[in-house]
Amino acid sequence: MDERVAKYEEKMQKTLASLESDLQTIRAGRANPHILDRLTVDYYGSPTPLQQVANITVPEARMIQIQPWESSLIKKIEKTILTSDIGINPSNDGKVIRLVFPELTEERRKDLVKEVKKKGEAAKVAVRNIRRDANDAFKKLTKQDVSEDEVEELQDNAQKLTDKYIKEVDAAVERKSKEILTV
Image 1 (tube, rainbow, N blue to C red):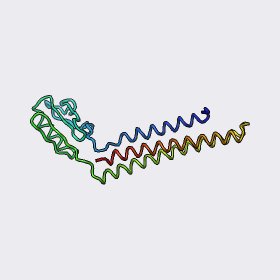
Image 2: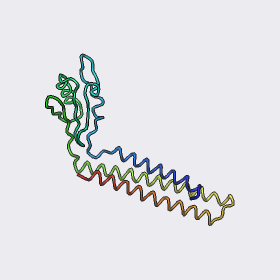
Image 3: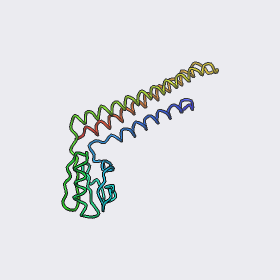
């Protein structure tokens, strides 16, 4: 491929990679232990972050398990979670505390799919803008003793790249939408 077209393909690849990393941040009903990051527990008179007094794991997709290193902390941790704005009631068996996240509602799933489609549209616009920039640059080449046929071929290659990346954006959006809508 012509190096004049290759630099625009690289920009399109970066746009697609950016979209895919954005889509990964959209969680489809999974428990995220980072919601506990700002919680502190009274530990021997000083407020201590929850991560420093307990082992926090995600044994299942919709459950966080908190295992304090000292069993005397269970009641304090439970009280901290209840008074926080997490909105989930903890349950404990005397050794570990479990937070079970409810299933996403159908309405919330549809909202997430709309968000995914918006991100996809933004990526398509970015790809088209790259094509426009490429075409503008190629048109200027006619002033530099490049034949019109060659310019037309460069523009044709830019269009083929655009079509390819728009299909890839659509595929990424479709995959993420299916993942979100799968119950």
